[in-house]
Length: 293
Image 1 (cartoon, rainbow, N blue to C red):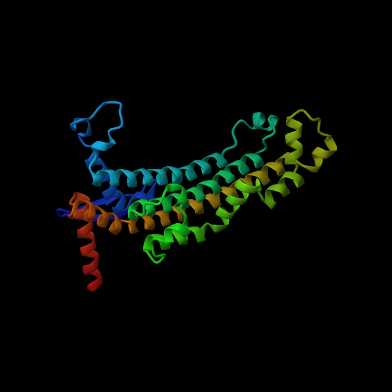
Image 2 (tube, rainbow, N blue to C red):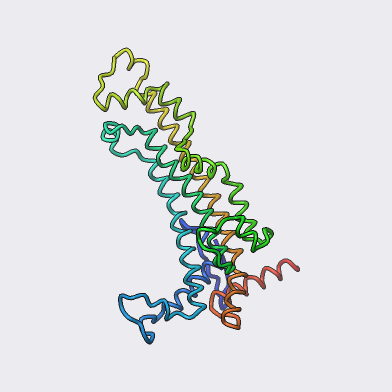
């Protein structure tokens, strides 16, 4: 939650599903974008249905590019919530089993998607640094080594990107193995599949007659219990990933504000003024005063 004072009134912003967007950089960016788009269709030379990008000023083009990348960051992060929802439910059980998709395989599919999304978020963070700093690297070359040739790795945004990578290094490594080797390892999944009869119940759903003695070895109630516990573990893991992702993205975006403001000042030749910038200045001054006292 962010609390600020404006004109003697306390204004409170409560975090929602995208907590990491509740920072001054994102608020100022949104404010700048809204100002750029206001009455845009009334600008001289505007043609409905065509690309009117050339009508934007240089600072507006910069804001638009940065905003587009933040939107990609937000959308991809939101998909982590979607993955949690998918894994938490296994709809159309009979249909999926008849098509050879057990709950274990259903969960695996979405866990693989999770690995990819975490890796994608890390990649988008590098794209954001490239754009905010104006490094002018082609998107395909926005990699750590290329960026650190142009920018000191001690820059705060880069330190946060590195921390993000180290936090999720295992998941990113699993993503690489999955993408380039078709490899997926989950010992618990394999154990439940074989030792608790999931494989046999899947084959039964596909039409294979299951021996009654074999069924007694794998009581359905025990199989369901193991699947519920397995699903629960994955959901708890995803909850931790979402929480850490939001925390690190919040720090990352907030760290970009000074660079964003400097770049705008270079383009405009002066500092940009707005409501959120005024609120940020007040909050900064208040923090500095509290620190001194």
